[in-house]
Image 1 (cartoon, chains in turn red, purple):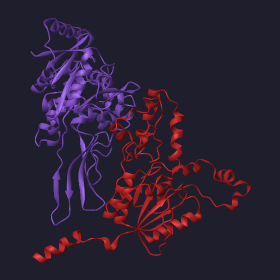
Image 2 (tube, chains in turn red, purple):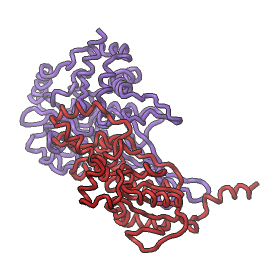
Image 3 (spheres, chains in turn brown, red):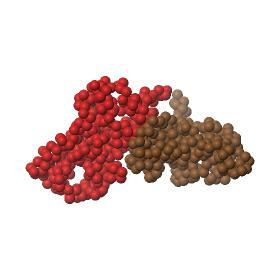
Image 4 (cartoon, chains in turn blue, orange):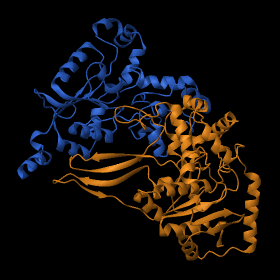
Length: 264
Length: 344
């Protein structure tokens, strides 16, 4: 009986060093700034590297990997057929896929493309030979393949990267907070941007960034995507209380939220 | 009665002397008519004339984010160690509404099971009150709940009587402080001046909604199905501002966080809000307060009904913060008035 007991405990104690998860980073339509955030983690990066094996990361290492991946980080959104095919191939080789950054999670600024007629915007970007350049409306990663974890933000917020990595390593679901940014902003005791006479997207944007921008004197641009159930009527009251123009708020929303209504 | 005197010119000596003994937190101007309790070392940093701060002083008793315990999964049996830390500090110039807020929290956290993190902090905090001789602004409703006058809950209490402050000494801790600083006793003339200030306040302050507090109890007893809640709910952003800034809201969420070594970690609590959609969601996905109207109603009942039933005390302190902070213009006084009008 005693030995049996010991055996059940053994897996929890066993060091997993021998089987460190193979992790890779890939980018699509993006500025690659979120991958840069990973290298900006400083000492925390060393802790992550102690827990995983990075096998592909164009921005940091030159190695390639031809086997399956345990975890892939996907930065960027999908804007042409080639990207779509490439993403599907990566997904087929990956046990866990993390949508990494605003472009991957919500379409990000690339979503602004969807506010135009496709051919019109192609022409404006590529000139008269635009038909030579394939282009599709911007899609977030989960509009193409299954996503297991989301790390929102433009750029991603370092403490949240760590949180999601830990959840992924333990195989636990990570829940992106579905409260407005105000909920964290207030705890940081910032003077409300509306009190300063500036329109801020905090009231409609998912928290989880610890009101990073407002803490540093900027407004919330809505980079984390809309909360699942945004206050539709509230905008009217907010606009009238602070004497603002409604377009100010809707235009600001289009910067990050044109691709889809709210990230998951 | 134990009253002392501090000449206004000597406030800086008082703050400096206090700051030598412990950290001192006081209202500081943040611009745009916003104030916050922050650490100060001299009097000129302090705004003695301020409207209620963004967050109430509850943040010193129950920090927005707090570590409860460290755990270690190394070895066969998980080990854990409670984190009980409290720094000695003074909160200076606390308005009577916020003193009332602290009294409410004291009651809540002294209930069993006792909250040792809160109680330990409370033991280590010196509270110095400051009387409001006039309204801070039109959002306050302190007279409605009787918090425009001091009702205890402090070590020392300052009232402005012209060129000096008269200080009520309410505890031994307070006594030791003023004795240590050698502050003189109040004279008969000072006591008369204090009486005049209090008398003038009878004129300056009055029931802000024209509904007697006792009547309000009935109003809430009948108001569960009021359409007022749907109006309020249709405007609510669910941002949680109203509860985060409330001196008596104390709901929190607990999470365990593991370190990257996957063996050690901590349990932490953060302020939560009944206004969040996820607040009353339980396993299986059922949400007991899915509608914003129900969540807002719950907030009001947690101020004007449930605590009266339980503690015989309203948990609205009349500070007006929830109204000031609401981006969607949900106004406490208007809501109470509308509710009372409906039940007539």
